[in-house]
Image: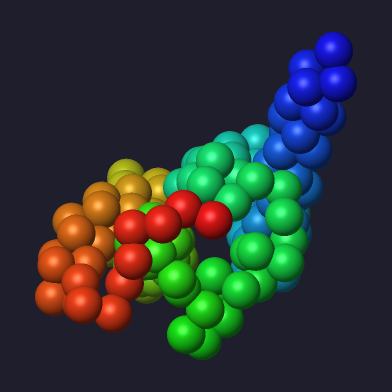
Length: 150
């Protein structure tokens, strides 16, 4: 019974962390210039997508352990190939989101320039690029990394 209680508690913590990351990303997007009221649903759904690309893999691999998250995302904090892959895909998702924002202010008047379409595409392409880059990075640096899962 204690095992089930522990699993349920851990699952609920992960759900709360996911929702907190969605709201955090939503606030960050608004602070960076996303419409506050007009496109609130689109902005929040984009926050959910980015949280799915970044927070969910962290929760699946590291669990709701903030100290492990800080260790993995600090400089030289990666100790296994799984953490390395997590770090690469998360960072590439953020970079893709950032690069996806560049076409928004251009006066091309294309349908894909509407908020948050280009950022969503950038995040998706960044995440996929991270999934491609991660095994290559691991292959080239396999001597320094281990296969343990902490």
